Image (cartoon, rainbow, N blue to C red):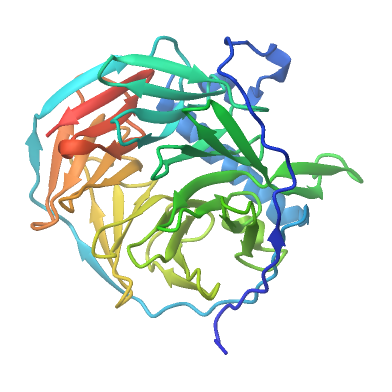
Length: 418
C-alpha cells in the first residue's frame, strides 16, 4: 500500500451520441451570445493572454472563497500527497547570442484569431483553435490556405489541441466544457462532455453559479489515451477513446481543489503524466498505472506556471508568466534548474509557448520582447531570434519537421528556420 495519494476511481461511460458536423458556412453569433470577457482584448494576442490569466485568477478566488460542489457522473476523491525531495540550482546564462534565421509570415484571412496553442500533423499542416472566431482551424503551408471549421456547440473556447497518430484532431473546448475529436477525412466531430461545477454566487446571496470544468490543455499517451487538465475543477482527466470511459483524478480535497487551477499537461517517454498548476508553485506527476500523484515543490518560485513539456531523456521543462523564467526538473533527483531568458537584459515579462525539438533544444516565445529563444541543450546558453515585424506578439509555438519552428503572431502564423 502506498503512503502517497492513492485514488479511488470512478469511470464515466460516454453518455452521448456521436455528433457529426459538416464544415458549414460561417455563421456569426449575435453579440449577446458572444463571450463578453474577451471583447476589450481582441486586438492583441498578448493582451488576450493577460485577460485569460486575470480571468483565471478571478475564477480561482471565487471558488476558493465560496467552496463548490461538482455535478456529473465522473468525480474522484483523493487523499493528500507528500512532496518529493527537491534541490534547486540556479543558472544565470550570462552569455547569450542573437541570431537571425529565416522568418516567414502568413496572415490570417481575418482578424480576431486569438490562437493559444498549435499542433502539426504528419502532412505538415498546422491545427489550432481560433478563440476569437469560435473555430477549429487548419493552415496548409504548401498551399498557404486557411480553413475554418465550426465546432458543435462551440463557445469560443478551444485551448488545448493535439494531433493523434492517425492524424485525427483532439481538442479541449474550455467554455463549452467538452473534449472534442475531429476526423478530417469524414468531417465528423465526436464530443465527450464533462461535469459542471456548482458554487455559491458571491455577488448574489442565496444564489449559485454553474461553471464548466474548463478543460484546458491536453496530451496523448502512447496508447492513444487522452489526458487533460480541468482548470476550474482542480482535476486531471483521462479518456479512453476506444470505449469512451473517463476517469477523474481530483488533485486535492473538495475545498481546495479549485484553487490549484491545473493548466498544462504532458506525457514523458515512460508514460508518466506531468502537469502545472497556476494556483500553486509546484509540478505534479501522475502514474497512470497506480493513480499515484507526486508533487515537486519549487522553492523560491513565485510565478504562474504555464506550458509544460518533456524531452527525450525525461527531463521536464516549464514556462512561467513572470521574469522570463524557464524551469527544468530532473524527475530522478528532484533537482530544479532555473534559467532566465531576456533579449535586452530588462525584465522580459512572461514566457508562454514551449517546444522541444528532436535535437533536444528548448524553444520558447518571449511575448513582450517580440522574440523566440532557444536554450542550447549542450551549452545551456540562450540564442535569441527577433521577429521582424514589430510588436507581433509571438505566443503559441510548435516544432515542425526539419527543425522548423511555427508560432503565432497577432493574426498571423510565423515560421522560423534557424
